[in-house]
Image 1 (tube, rainbow, N blue to C red):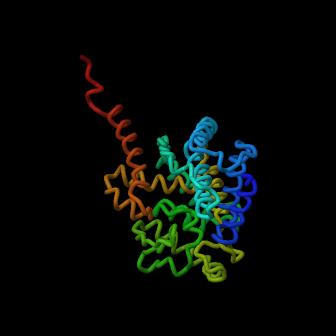
Image 2: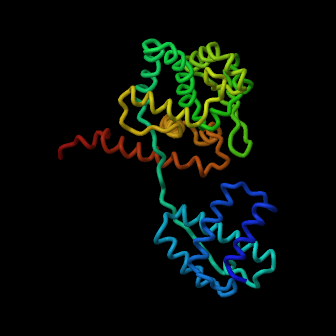
Image 3: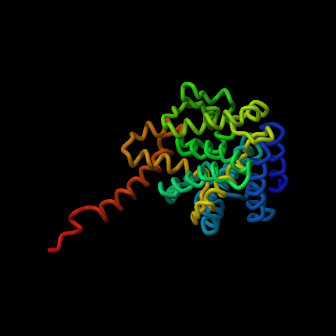
Length: 305
């Protein structure tokens, strides 16, 4: 059978039988059509392990390891389907040993002085904002910024918080993380707690109306994009040239704890990582900080021999 027909059959199987979401099917379609174009009407049985190796080499020349890994996962899943349906006698992937050496991409953090400047800009807006609306909105914005830095919460987790998830009496936030995994984080900073309490007092009706803790005055839930715009707004007000994203607050939270000597397993639990290996990326960041300290602060650097 032609490769094109087999791919169309596989995509239908993914949609109707495996019930994969549209985003995943779209990614499969892109990867498999690229694969089909490379082999150009070749019979499926003619695609051997050797030919796959040549295709993998082409991918490595064009894409970063992470992208190559994803494209190969799409193709590998396709061949498993063909094997399951007895549409091929031999799966060429069974004779392949594929290894990746991904570059270590250190997470981007925000200097603590920058976070302080952004928070100051938000607090200034609360008292000196040009309009009543800006002053009111700043109450919510301060609560959001304080919580991002206090907990290392993902922006998607923050926007999905419900009123029941935030226990201001006992200073506890219940976070619903990836894979329906829950974790609880204490709010121990008094400024953060005051910001959350002030926000709840002023926005209580809107919070109840949309059943989300972070809401607009219109009574609708705060979206990820709105949260990003809020961060950009206060970055501009604080004259911060660095592009700041919500996830950078999470990275800064983790690296600050790592630099303070907090055990990595506690940081793993606070971030909601299912695997310690994911959290270990912050060890590399801490080592880079160690390098900077030893290069600039060690007394041996001052010796004149």
